[in-house]
Image (cartoon, rainbow, N blue to C red; front, side, top):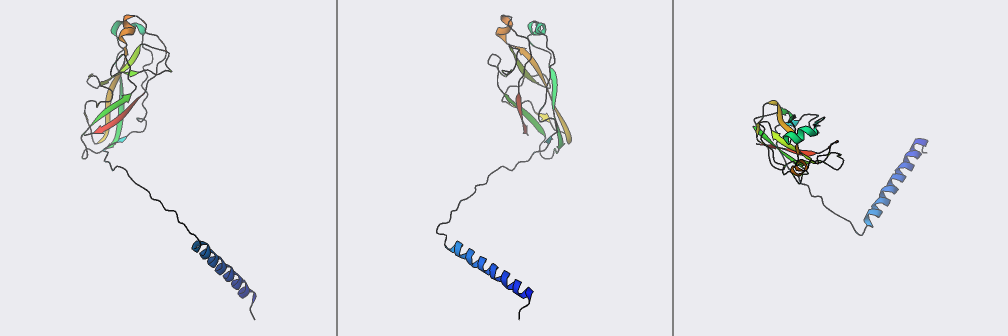
Length: 187
């Protein structure tokens, strides 16, 4: 005679066997199998430095620029700003250039346009290398040497009055905003 545990085991064994046989029948009755594929791609790169936290988005605040200064000089004094790199390894690459991209001012070639949130008008933003030479938009800056561990890439920005706004004295005061994106090019 079977005890209680043997009866329970027999019931579970029967249920499991029934499930397995039923599943096999469901699989065997499948008449069409769908297949597909994946395509993988990418680029393996070597970057000798990492962008320091906080240098991904760099606020450059001109604070207040006098309209009088723009009429007298045509532009503001340059304001320094930097991109900070960390964990640099100069055995990989020795120098870096930076390419700035953004919306170009139609009246000032190679100057950033201010956006439509701006209440100021008649101006653009120019960029300079550390030695005060102009940086063209969408073109690499002068190369700057990397140093092991940390590197600071220094630049300057200035406000430039548009020629027509200067001639007609139509520079409008107010807030201005512009955005540039940068790409590091290691050499």
